[in-house]
Image 1: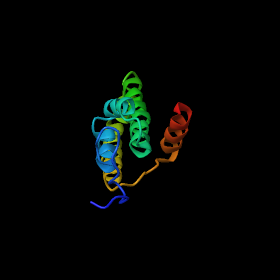
Image 2: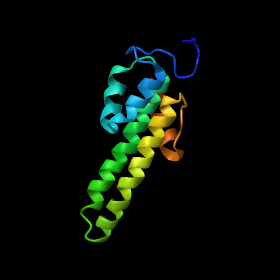
Image 3: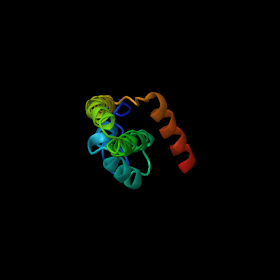
Length: 118
């Protein structure tokens, strides 16, 4: 492996950058939280982990709240599943390619939150 190739940088966890990014999304916000706790050095992995927490945490909370609304909530919750699946696959694919893909609002929020943590 060539040093400096996108996705090939190591992290404090010993993971390749692209694998760590993919793992940040693998179990939704749970794997994001775990990687935020254990990864101390690699900013790209930390970005993917934070974006995972924001996106999939928000979708999780939204789906719980929506289920309390009769009929319309059920219909909306049927739409959340496929949207979450597409986001999950897209984000894992982009992370594995070594791309630091920013979702419109969540990417900025993740970047800002990481800046505050330092």
